[in-house]
Length: 283
Image (cartoon, rainbow, N blue to C red):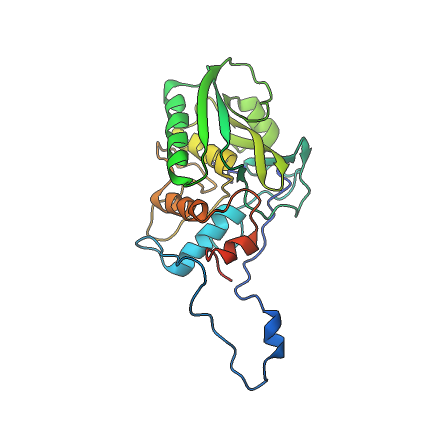
């Protein structure tokens, strides 16, 4: 849910308070080295090499991945602060209980091989329904190895909580405001069954919301993506905290970041150490 004015993750979230990237974690073995020995500099990585897309430095790419999946670092956008501050467009629940402030610093996402029943409200416009199907097609293509399957069906205009294994997409200004505040035009709410694992989710949008708002909220609700900043010289990310009022899907940079993360086997629940072990973020 983005806010035309301020942020977008209208999350009443209690969960994604950011932490700064640690540029260099000290290894225990460093303490045992001779005082005269030079500090070792890491020049190679045990994991697959990370090659940034054209136009992006490797450091910026690592920061972008950290912001997109963990909500940390210089490329991270505004993140939810607490359940009582509905200024963003992402609300996370542990079962049905809002997560506590400072509690969420992991990758979010559906479990491996999830078959998600997508309930699309009959009140959506044809263009909005197209945005749902196109975004899910994109997700299926870029979440390499995840085995996600999406079965889309139409449901009535009434708003009812989704069951386990369901994603609901409904136009409801009242629910957007209730969950994410008056500045938001879209909102994603996810219920988690285990650390970082989404088991059901809802996307609420304003009836007149443009396509990029739907893509943005599905980015939260399916891939668990966080808000990011724009990278100089590249198209504005869909996961920016403010709608661009466009028909765009996830940008090439966002798509490639998702591919890299899923290709290396990371799923909902992965933490900073897992991302470092896969050579994806700054150590």
